[in-house]
Length: 459
Image (cartoon, rainbow, N blue to C red; front, top):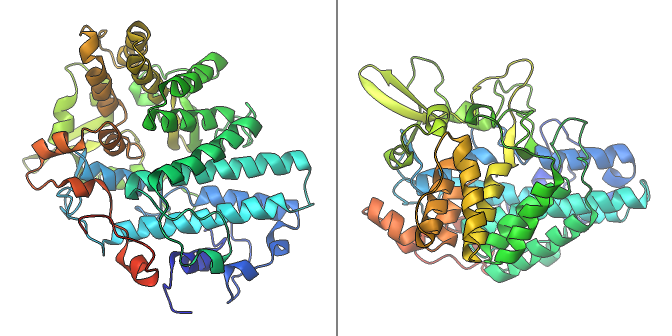
């Protein structure tokens, strides 16, 4: 087989080759010929396989996977959150079909989706663990698959829906529609909600693997994106009713590993040779007090914060070097490893859920409750309550999302697109904006390998 023949051969090469959770040496034959008994014949192999999926969630270097770091910096530049000292490609939305970042996102996503599918099939067919544990782990992997496809559909639009490890069936698969991708996401999440428990399956005191409320959090966002307002509100209200979560008292403590606000997070780097705690901290913070930050906060975002907003003081740090002033993201405070580890990758948190609920309620005409939930987030930021009209409420919620959810998993980029504001907002801010830039290009190498993949318009 030719090198880079397809995304699925890349997945084969990456099968379970996690940095510290490697399970097997990779044989030189297709994916579907790898014996499930090699990996899923005992509980230790199953545990390692599941752990490997989460290892690949994070960026183990400065953006080397579909992790928070790469999604954050790419979409942050593509929107109006970040600028980059060494390239204006994403700031100017000038990415092309041969863009290396898009290729890395695509390849790493399908590599890990392969691992999730292998776990779903292998765990579902094993007799090495109890039926109840099998159901729980399969539901967990389906949640993870839904999370990945949620990112992919918002980055690229319709993408191939790969739910099998059979290379012969998937190698030439075309793109599914956006609706079809969301149908799989919602089906996977429905199973996750039905099976996952309130307790976290990870080590006591940690939230490193998804529980019931994690599935509800992603479900709430999916329902919001699909404009299913009642369902979005229902999910968030159930999270709030659990009493398991509370907003951090100050913005500076939101991203601590022990934060009560966090619904789901992932541990920092698990690579012994990597001297950093989270990819965001390592990438976004300056390398020393004498170094200018590579990524700076876009002036548009800097100016979006109201006077006396505690979030701006905590999450954007200003420094002056050699007569020049720089603003850089500082939600994560630690650039390098320390002992003990204090920060973790935040995947979902309660402030996001309050704003999801407020937006859904505003669309439903429940303005009073929407304002109450909006003000809950504003109060933690040290700001007064909303004083505008009902007609202006949605705009106020969108603004609050802009300043609350900055530099987190592409929220700003996704929000601009799903609310239909991207052309108006970025068209006014960027002279070279084109509507087709709202979707990333399908990597040219994948189209060459698979003629059934159709490129997005504009590339």
